[in-house]
Image 1 (tube, helix red, strand yellow):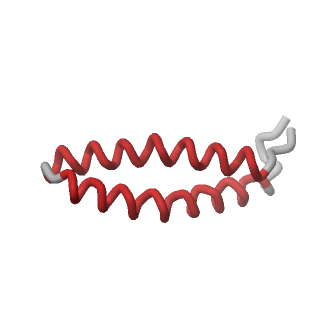
Image 2 (image 1 turned 45 degrees about the horizontal axis):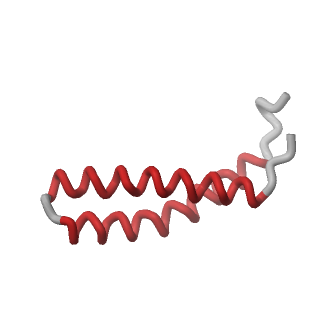
Image 3 (image 1 turned 90 degrees about the vertical axis):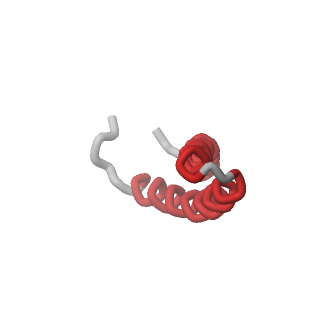
Length: 67
């Protein structure tokens, strides 16, 4: 099975939306501040999309575990 770059990008974006919402909720409950939660979630989403995409691209080169 060939994994396309568009599929990897779509997976990265949908995962980040879910994970960023989680970060926002946790930060809000810990700090009680919507402003802090928004700031942290905004920074986190940008850095982690890039990290996740690079991680998926690296794993696309690994043959281990493919059928």
